Image (cartoon, rainbow, N blue to C red; front, top):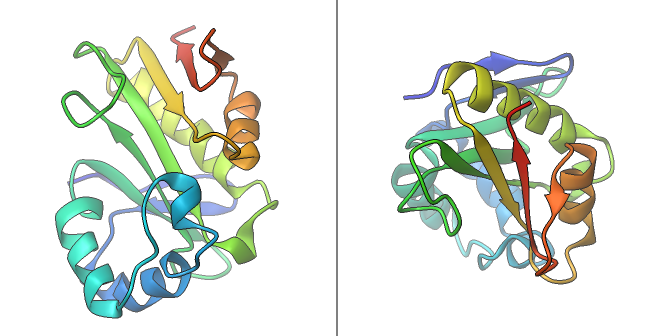
Length: 162
């Protein structure tokens, strides 16, 4: 299980069953999931199952603003074979989403900076990959803010250890 981390405005912590209702509130929005490659959640029960099967494993963290104390998004590091692009044990992929009411507040770049620090310093990664779906300008912008460099295919980007 991942250990909590903090930034100036955020706590990054493991997901729990108690987060299911809040997860459903944000993950049921038709503008959130499809932009990240998944369909909107259909029920609190589905959100609870997704917490158990997907969010409460590995290096996946709830994004919790210190002034809200509820999760408003998620950020994770994915490793092979779960990652589409991580090709070695020293590579991983950064994935994230945030609830629509929190778009444009700089929370994902803030969480992303801490996750990159964690990946390189704590986990010894040499390369972190980022993907975004065509048309997801917000995700592309997050990766630019985090220093990812675009590859020739236009969708994959990476940040190497510096």
